[in-house]
Image 1 (tube, one colour):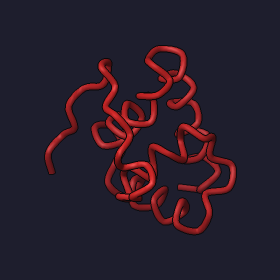
Image 2 (cartoon, helix red, strand yellow):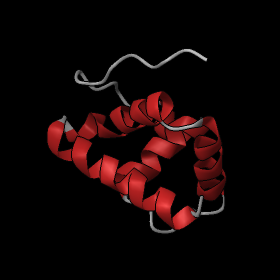
Image 3 (cartoon, one colour):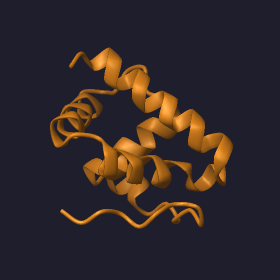
Image 4 (cartoon, one colour):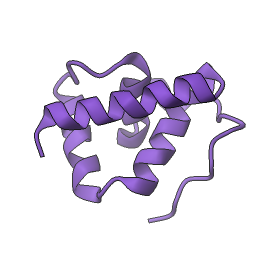
Amino acid sequence: MHNEILVQMANDIANFFHGAADPGGAPRSVADHLRRYWDPRMRKQIMAYYAEGGAGLSDIARAAVGLLAGAPSVATAPPSPHSAPPMEG
């Protein structure tokens, strides 16, 4: 899948959670969504794109992908009271 499509999808999800949840918890909610619903190959690709700079990702989407990638700068973000627990595996 093209990176541009993954970026657009991640930004769309981020826009939804920005409006639906506490904005401070939106990155965690987006990361949870990506863990639950994106194919592992898509997650791997967006994390590689993030590692290369992640051009075009919104702030929330960038923080969410950082959580997926284990980036220390965003991994300490407080959990959203609206987010579902992360899937195992």
